[in-house]
Amino acid sequence: MPPSHPSSSGVTELLRDLIRAASPNPPGDERAAARVILGFLERIPDIEIEDAGVDPLRPMIVARLRCAAPGPTLLLNGHMDTVPDPFGAKVAGGRMFGRGASDMKSGLAGLVVAFGRIAELRGELAGTVELHAVPDEEPGGHLGTEALLRAGRIAGDYAVVAEPTGLSVFRAQKGNVFADVTVRGRSAHGSMPWHGVNAASLAARLLVDLEDRLGPLLAERSHPLVGPRSLNVGTITAGTATNVVPDRCVLGVDRRVLPGESPRAALEELAAFIGDRGTVEATHLGAPFETPEDHPLVVAAQAAVAAVLGGPRPCGGLVGSSDARFYADGAGIPTILLGPGAMDQAHVPDESVPLEEAEASVPVFVELARRLLVAG
Image (cartoon, rainbow, N blue to C red):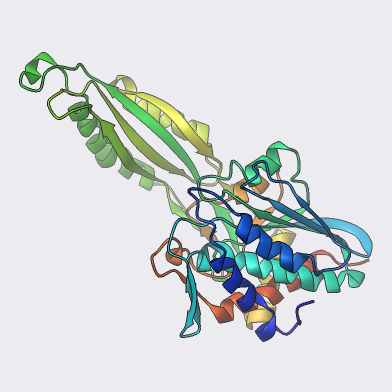
C-alpha cells in the first residue's frame, strides 16, 4: 500500500509511469496506461476490479471498494487518453513535464492513489467508492464514460471528475453544440464563374454575419462561473479543384452553451438565424450543468480543499467540456470537477503540472471521501 504522507504519496512515481505509458488519441490505445493503473490497484486488498471497455484497444477500468457500513456511493472519474505527442515525464523546477501531465494524468494518478488510501480507511467509513479510469475522453467520450452511461453503469450519489482545476472546486461546466452548416451553390468552369454560384463566397458572407451579428448577441448573456456564450467557425470545407466553381461549402460551427440553456434550443436558434442561407445539422450536443453552491458535495469539497491547503478557495467553472456531463446531465448525479493542473497547460507542447499540487490532490480526495461517507 502507498504511504499516507502527502509528500510521499506515490503520485509522482505513478504520474511518471502514466506519462511514459503513451495513450494518444487519435489513434486511441490506452492499454499501456491501463496496465500501469492496474499494477497499482491490484496491490489493494478486497476491492473489485473489472474491464468495462467496449473495444479491445480501449480498456476501461472500474474499481469498487465497499466500506464497513452501508451508505452513499462516491464516483471518481479520470481519463487515460491524451492528445497526441510529445510524451516525456521530465522533472524540472518542481514540475513534471510531459503529455498528459495536466490533462489529466496527474488528476487520474491522484484519484488512484487516493482510492488506495480510502481503502485503508474503509473501516471508518460508510458507503461505496467507485473509480472509473476511462478511455476516449478527448474526442467526446463515446467509447469511454458515455459507454458506461449507455450500459446503465453510472449510478451513485456524488461524482468527482479530476480535470485540471488547480485544486479549486469547479461546480459548473459549459455545454457545446457542434453543427455543420451547408451552403449550396452551382458549379461551373473556373474560367466562366458567371455561369455558376460560388458556395464558398456565399458561406464567407454568412460567416462574417455570424461573427458580426450573432456572436455579439450571444455574448450579451454570461454566467458568473463560466463566462459568456460564444460562437466559433472552426472549419471551412469547399471545392473540388481550383478551376471549378464550388457548389457546396460546409462551415463547422461551435456554439458554447451556458448552464440553464438547452443545447437543442441553441441549435434551433442557430438555424433560425441562418434561415434559407444554409442547412444546419448537429454533429454533437453536449449538455451544460451547474451544481448548487450549497449542495453537500460542493460544501464538503470546499471544506476538504480548505483543510488540506490551509484556506478556502472560490468555486469556478469549466469553459470547455469534459466527461462530467455524463454524470451530471446524463445520470442526474450531483457532480464537480476537482483536480491538479491548469487548463491553460492542456494540449500545449511543454505541458506540465506542479508536483506539489499533484501530491496535494491525494489528501484532498481522501478528506472529501471522509466528509461524504460518514459512518453513522
